[in-house]
Structure formats: C-alpha cells, structure tokens
Image (spheres, rainbow, N blue to C red):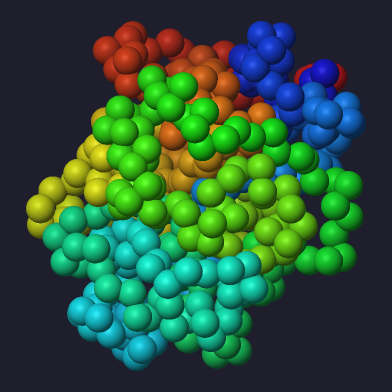
Length: 422
C-alpha cells in the first residue's frame, strides 16, 4: 500500500506513514519533506479513489482545501519582494474601491493577518463569479467589516484568497489575478505541479477523489474540534458558520470533486496539486527563497507573528486564541508545529492536510489525504508524521500540545545515502 523512498535516518516518518494505513486511518495519502533544499521524504500510498479502488500513484494530485492558503499567499510575498507591494500601505492605495464601507484605513498587513473583519461576504455568490469577475470585486469592495479592523482577528476561511487575488491584479503590472500569477511566477520557476483553478488540459484521472462528510456529521465528532467553534458552527447565523457558506456549494466538502468547482479560482480553498510540490515550495522558503527572488525582509515578515490586535488574540471565527502572519498561520498554544523558535509558518486544510516551512531546521513539510477527518488541525494521521520528523529524527520539540513537557528524544541522523521504501 505504501511506496516512495526516504533518506537514511528518516525511517521513523516512513514507519508512521505505514502505520496510518495499517490502522485503517487512510484511503489514500502522500507525505513529502524537503531539508536544506533537498528532498528527504517522498511517500504515497493507498487509493486515489476508494470507490473504484484505483491506486494513488506517484503523480497523483489532490485537493487540499485551506492548505491552499499558504501556497497562494506566496504569490503576494513575491510581489512584496519585488517592491511592488508594501505590507504597511493601505489596501485602498492599490485598490481604491476597497476603501468603501469603513475599510479606507485597512492596511495590507491587517488584511493578510485576518484582522480586517472580512471573513464573510454578504452578497450571494455563484461559481461563475469566482474567477476574477467584476461581480466578485464589487462584492469584496462593498463588504462592511464584522469588527473594527485592527481591533480583533478571525480566520478568513474562504474570503482571504479572493481579497488577495484582487489585490494581486491591482499590483501586478500585467493585471493578472492570483491563479495565473501563481502559475507563471511561483509554480513555473520551481517546477511545481499545483493549480489554483484547475486548467482544462489537466487529466482529471490523476486527481484523488475526496471522501468527505456532511456538515451534521461534524457534531458527532464534536470532541475533535474546539468546543466553542463546534457550537458556533452549528448556528447558521453565526460568524463561524457564515464564513464557510458562500457560495453555498462550498458548504459540502464532497463538492470539491466537481469539475466546475475545481476549475473555479478559489485561492483559499481549492488548490489542487502534488503533495511534494507543496513541500518543495515551503522547502524553498525555509532556505531563503532565492528561487523565487524572496528578500530577507519578506521572509522576516512571514516568520514573524502579526502584531496582536488591540483587543487580544481571541479568534472571532475559530473561537480560541490563534496567531497569524501574512497569509499564514503561526504556532499558537493549541497548535504547536515546527521548532521551538516559533518561526515556522504554514496553513492547515479541512480534513487533515497541512503544509509549512520551518526556517530554523530548513524543513518544508507537506501531507495530504483524501479521507477527510474532523480536526481543524493536528489530525492524528498528520501529527504522527510531524512528530516522527521533528522529535524522532530532528530532536526538536514535541508537536502535540499535550506533550509540551515531554522529554525531547533525539533522532538518528540525516546521512545523505538513500534507502528505498516500497
């Protein structure tokens, strides 16, 4: 069921990946790790389609839900590194219409750090509106913030990517929206196979089928997520529920399998690609980003947590204290990832996927699967892999909040010879 290879010394990651299948946790999945710019883990296994029993192959691509956010946000970082975008400039300086409805003073930094109060779009949207349309731009610009920007923060679960995309189109000299800009300026230089809006030319037989759940099933697994969020999400009028329900087609996870949903440009939600491409991108960022022309100041901004909102870190959508940077999630008490310095940055996705960079160790990590779990982060399958990497191999801090006081175990080295794992 498991294929691929790991470098010598990274066997604990392969063992954890295999155990996920042996314990019946997976249908299909992949995990990849880059260290100091070199691929050291490349594993895949199971079925890309559990109904048809079609195997997950080396070139299988998979929808990764909100893990897309971090991949997409690298496009904004590239614009900053080129001097075309200032994180501390007002968004309205680039996009005048954005300044309506009390948003005139919102900065790019506040927008990307989930502080702008824009997790919800009130105007109903359809799939036809989502790929850089005038209707979407109008809906974004006319939206009134749910709180005074800068006072609070809350996860912009769906909207962040659309705001980023419209901003990119206003800043890019060629006027490209995020999907095309990413393809040409991020994916192409690094030879990544990852799409934000699936092109018609892609063979859809290579795409893993997502095996999801209905919204009501989340309440059966309420203990897997923060209790306050679970109860808020059950109220369809709450900010927590409304943040994920427009357009309505996105409210059902299995709809990500629909060709029309995959073709739409939804940068925060519907990225589709190879898992090793996600790890490759984060691995590039972890070692300085020269392949993308990233500057030290850009990377310092990504590594540093955003300045805390004036009224504290309580997340108005996820309903517990969180931490963000510029399009990325940062480690916070309920979600420990990377090394102890806290410089790691990445994003997690619905169902259990996760990708991040850890500059202190030079690590780019990615995991994705097609059987959706119910955790908002720290899915047991994913965290087992991350724990094997950071604790058993690298000798870094435990990755689980409940093991914060555990004694650090040291790894077995990182020799460059390779051992196959078939």
